[in-house]
Image: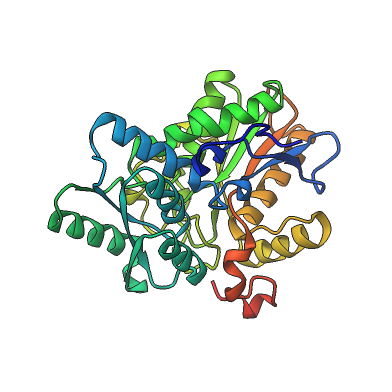
Length: 326
């Protein structure tokens, strides 16, 4: 039975209420559940912030109908904003580093947005700078800036996490999520800690990312293939609140690649690299809970599978590790 039993007025009404599904590889005594965000209309968790941020900015008057939203993005946020912009009478422009998924950029354009590429070597910092330059050149343009906009985390506090807690009758022991902007985990963490101060919160990043340095780790910066999470410059990720995080776990790309393939082959999940990293860490947290190494209010772990692997097929995600072009 559909979660939407009556006809809906707009595709925006289909954002959220995604399935929560067990991860079979988890220990029997401590189940792991994953929120399948590819069920959103734009096929990723970023649909939630696209809808939420634009609706809130329009309501607050920081964005006007007919105005322009300019966002630096690796792709999924652009798609989410583009889906919302097309329904809310807003123009959309996205600044995307060249190396990111061609499929995502094609979808943003299909949704009516303009895409501007910046050099790969400039990273997201370069894309952010270019977005602000463009906004200064246009009348009635705004940069929501997902890396620092509290509405990003608020979207997950107001939508994603309440859905999780409702599905599990509030019995959530640990929350695990990858951090790119950190909006997803921060929204989940704040909700979880308000529900029970002993809720265990874990951030996930690829090896080579530097979030863990915020907890005193001597992690070394390096390139990584995992897409959508991690940072080379934590100072640009202003939403991350280390006080809300119990642990930050790094996952090697090779392990993530293997888990992507296992999830598809054994569990039928066609999910991308950030989902696979989340899955591995969530399973480890569940084992640690089972073994008594982590104390939690309930014996359960929840994570998110942010998007689908279909957007990364051109990068060889299901080929050998050596052929995977991150």
